[in-house]
Image (tube, rainbow, N blue to C red; front, side):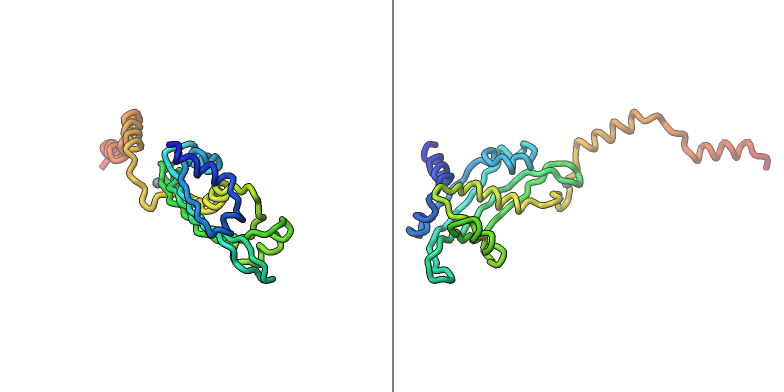
Amino acid sequence: MKHDKEPVTAARHLDLKALALSGGDVSGHESLSKFERIMQETRGLGGDSVVNWSAHGEMRPGASGEDQVWLSLTAGAIVPLICQRCMGSVDVALSVDRQFRFVSDEKTAEAEDDESEEDVLVLARDFDLPALVEDELLMELPLIPRHETCPQSVKLEALDADFDSVTPEKPNPFAVLAKMQIGKPS
Ligand SMILES: [Zn+2]
């Protein structure tokens, strides 16, 4: 278990420039329970899910000829959400495949993010990769989660049956009509 944990901790304090200079890869997987913002979306149901990610760092020449830090990120998770049609749990597969370019300050990042296909972020010595993974996965969450075809809920059927049995018997409209016709002179 110890070996599983060390790369994850390292990924939360990543030296991106060093990773890019070495053309290095980092990957990891961690329980969804560590991703608090996604866990809120699952209303606590996601504790058994796992988030996987893989990132590759490299230097690429920028417009001014100066090398820039780039990160390619892929990540995925299967996240249980509440189906808005049947209110049951629905497993939704989220996946992310994005490119990031890093610049030295917030101003440059803001200015260049709008006009770039890739996302532009500020370079940090101590970069939290799982936090970026969480940001990206959150953006992939469906606005209205639902099953393609809702499963028939056994619980709901049982509730319906109970409901029927406690409903007081309504008079059958045809029986009422028949009675009225009996009293009618022909
Ligand atoms: Zn459903």
